[in-house]
Image (cartoon, rainbow, N blue to C red; front, side):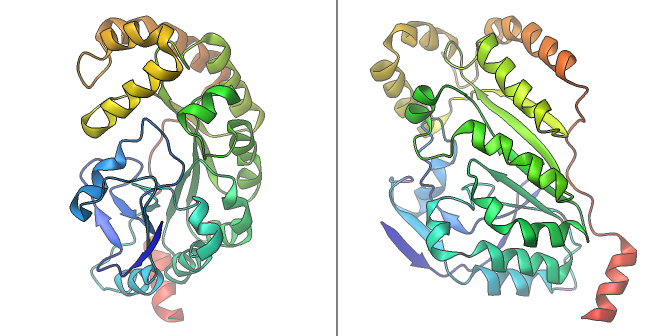
Length: 293
């Protein structure tokens, strides 16, 4: 169910710097349905457990963001659009908020990071390219598995993994920095050489700037639905998954067993740049902005 709400604020700060310290979330909740999603907690204060089914649309997000970008105290830090939910989920096809959000970034010349599991950003590539001529824009794709049968179970409403990685070449040509977040690597399900090698190969074919692997975490509200899915859809690996995740993090023995393969692939397909967020807008551009606006 779609519910329209008014945002009291647009910019949100968090201590962990990934992909940046600042987020703008246009939507609350996400229709991609990723069974390992860490963001279920964000529905708690709404007293609504249905993170995937009840989508809250912040219909005033453009006006609110414009006001906050215009504050003298704002230092033009890079902002991740969609830190908790995907800005390009299915609801965006109906509401079309992102084009105006990007225009607001252009108006204020603010660096942008997009993290997505969708190919819908291609709709806005003209605007994104316009922004990339002014400041740094990063387009990062989250990708876990190439096998469509597995993807349709673990992240049923995302775009096919091949499609979302392949679109990165277009954004590279548009002047953006691009990358693949190879996350989450799921033990005994998406950690095979064939799967990981295939993702690295696609990344190289599309000339991405970076590939950042990360192993699945199972914390809080994520654990129970994930383990239920494994038991129902992949019962043969359930005993091993249970052992590996006796706590929220994967066991060190598993991590140690996976590291040689990751190092091998990083070496074979790299070198990859280490991810660093975009720099704030340069002082010279700030001065120009004051003259223009």
